[in-house]
Image 1: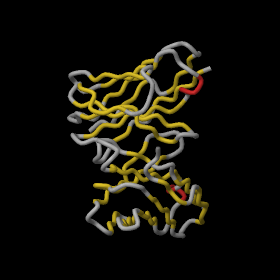
Image 2: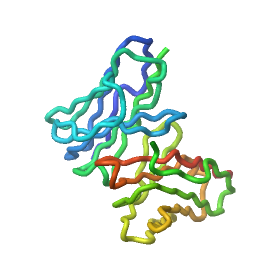
Image 3: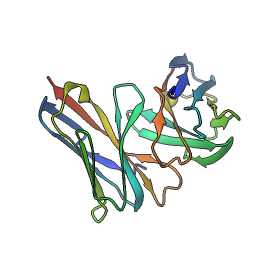
Image 4: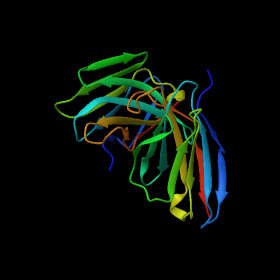
Amino acid sequence: KAGVTQTPRYLIKTRGQQVTLSCSPISGHRSVSWYQQTPGQGLQFLFEYFSETQRNKGNFPGRFSGRQFSNSRSEMNVSTLELGDSALYLCASSLVSVTGELFFGEGSRLTVL
Amino acid sequence: SQQGEEDPQALSIQEGENATMNCSYKTSINNLQWYRQNSGRGLVHLILIRSNEREKHSGRLRVTLDTSKKSSSLLITASRAADTASYFCATDGETSGSRLTFGEGTQLTVNP
């Protein structure tokens, strides 16, 4: 069974631009959650989607948004990028519960210049 | 805020030695999990222990949970160089809603 796939793996943007990251969960998994990982803040929960509905949201500004499609694939978008948005963005999928075992992708490394 | 806090932040040992990492948390939990992350990669689930369990084993891993002290420990026995990674505990605190909250991790280096 294929794992969680995130694209792109690496990207460089400049301040003010926007970025869209994609995540394909493990087949059959309906929950997709997103995390931001930085050296200073560690792993911070962004949001979780289940069956195309946002089920939970972390403490991030409205510039961070996401969505989930009917095939469970998910995207997250960050608008008006700031230097502090440079991070590893990790997507994780799970069968049903977001508090059970999570299966992570390799992440998308975003650098904002 | 981070629910789990790992201790120590960094640990360096020789191959063959045991490595012990600790995690403390603040609120009641339903379960506690440990994950491993190789540098710049995604996290890999290692083990989940429920709040009504005290100890769990998986291969060379042994996890204990003390809910009265709100703490857990991860023991890796007979460590190998390939165990070099960051290790995170994650909790689903009853007050944190439907999400996992990760600690800041312990960086383990196993020297050959």
